[in-house]
Image (cartoon, rainbow, N blue to C red; front, side, top):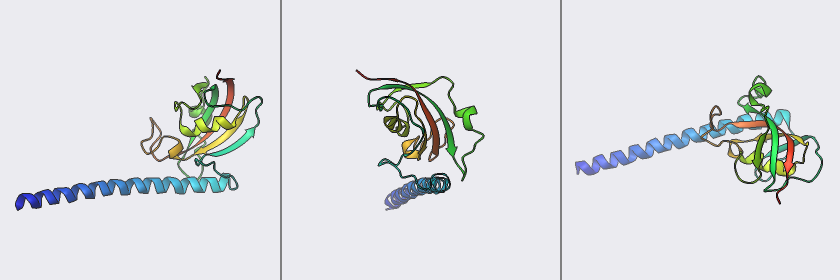
Length: 165
């Protein structure tokens, strides 16, 4: 009987620990969504998301054909973390901008999902601002210096497009 009680106590302890983790993750996600919604309300109050939740705002139209899955592209980009009501402008082009263009094949999942989707709305020369929640960026785990449950603002310029054959 004592072994059963000990096993039962251990079982409920494990359940309580996992519940705390889920609750903590839920709190982190809720905080992210609060910050994201406040940022969108202030900077893009009329912008509607795509079906995936991507917020796409074109600054400069490009030329040529719209980029398709399988095309190879080179883009310049800057990334800012949305971790307060205003994006931390000090991160700007100094730390986020790549002076060598980022090259990838569209639709292969080699970049964050939000960027992969966004370039399919773009052409060579297009400059656009993207707002990505963590589900379209680095998720709950984060990446390198980007914490989990962090929304991003990206400015992307399509530099070159190599159509798939």
